Each structure stands twice: as C-alpha cells, then as structure tokens.
Amino acid sequence: MNIKGLEVLEIILDIKYTNDIRQLNMIQLEVTSKAVEKIKAFQASDQQSYQAFRIYVQGGGCSGFEYGFSLDNPTEQDHVNEFSGVKIVIDPFSAPYIENAIVDYQEDFRGAGFQVKNPNAKSTCGCGQSFAV
Image (cartoon, one colour):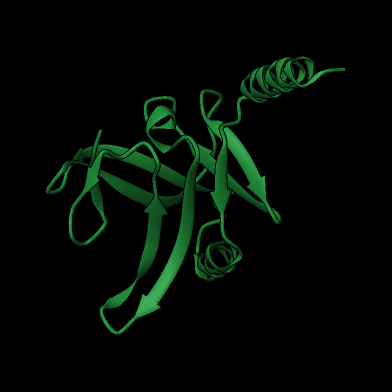
C-alpha cells in the first residue's frame, strides 16, 4: 500500500473511531491522574453519594464563558467518560466547548483548583477560569 493509501486508511479509521465515541455518548477528553485523585477525595468526603463529577460551561467570567465543576449524578442526555473508576459527565450544551480539553488539578501559593487546558478557547482570562470561543 502506498503512502496515500495509508493516509486514506488513517482518515477512515479516525472517522470511524470518532463516530463510535459519539454513538457511545462520550467525548474526547483527558483527565490527569492528579485530577482523578482529587475527585476521588472529594467524593469520599462528601455526605451524599454522587456517582459522577460534572464539568460544565456557563456564561460569565471575564471572557464570556466559565467552567464549573460539581459532584452530581448523570442524566440520560449527559456525555459520560470514565477515568480510573471516576465517571466524568458533561451536558450536551457544554460538550462542544470542552471537547479535546485536558482537565488537571493545580495547587500552588495562589490557591488550588481544577484547571482546563482547552484547545477550543480562542482566548482566556488571566486566572484561567474563563474563556472565549
């Protein structure tokens, strides 16, 4: 098979993989091991037995949109991904904004919290909690 044939095969496989993921109601997302550890700790310390960690986007912040995080239970409409035993749920509105993002947990002298490295964001504010598309 020549180079062009391999490129076409890679494109077909990529499209099939992407379609398979969408059919499973998942999105492309990466959650670091540090973020997974922190989510597990929050779930263990919470008085209620939420089954998942919700990541969402809402209007607000300096740049127009901001990220939100909560412990929650999945709904039928949610995109559900699992990382090391932690379910991550994302509502249909937020999914296109978070697709292909990396979620991490950072602690430093300025504070601690979840951070999103989002390739879909055209710009972000100085604190990194809001973004524009």
